[in-house]
Image (cartoon, rainbow, N blue to C red; front, side, top):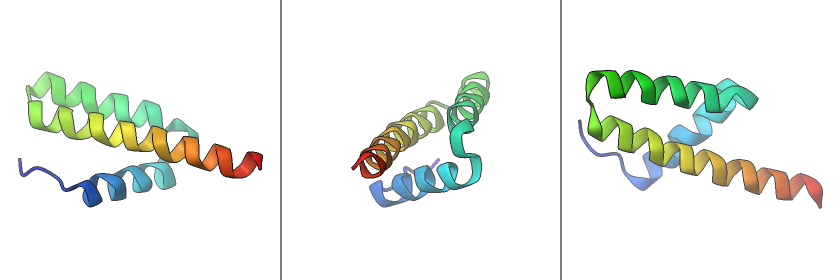
Length: 67
């Protein structure tokens, strides 16, 4: 698997949030679980990075709505 760029990881995180809303954690967990079963270490790392970015986006969104 080709490593994703930082920009691509952020784009993936944003797309997961758009498509899955408040169920994004479940979607990410399913993706990582499937990759674990396949033994795809690069894919696991990519989805872990996407999950970190989703958390950052959600935190930023939460701060923006609390102001």
